[in-house]
Length: 234
Image (cartoon, rainbow, N blue to C red; front, top):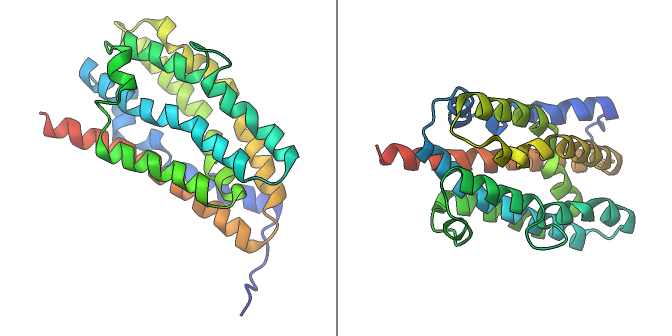
């Protein structure tokens, strides 16, 4: 039997997508403690080193979306995301700015880029996300990126907290977040428009919501792994 459920109208669909914010990683206890100034330098180093694996995987995820999408107009809209993270030359782009943050918290670039500190749980979660983008329909992968809708406010809160509560941290090293807030807002708006425009059946709308839930689970699982590792070290 076919799916006889009514297609959600644009406003209702958008509202349903926004409910995923309840599981966004800024609600995780680890991030809550970060924003409250309760982490020490070793905790921040663990977070920065592990999140590097996520950061450097984002252009691979975005390139997979471009590769899977048959629509040139969507490929043109999505391709700048790859360039944003990788830059157009060495030492440029979001990944390069993350390495500046790594040095500011006391990590060498070598120990970050060789991934010696990346936890198995973090690696598994991030690899699952990249695999999702490579194997699922392109519109589902676009929908999974809609966590960008929730990122600007979370990053603004986090950046303010890092500047205010971690006085030893060089504020210039937070350029990744300072530059990312507006960019994430623009990318989230663009991705939302794509999802709302191309998910034209109830089946595709449901798939988009599942994809976004999957992404929030990926992010939450990363922090679970980091927090568990730090608890074992106490």
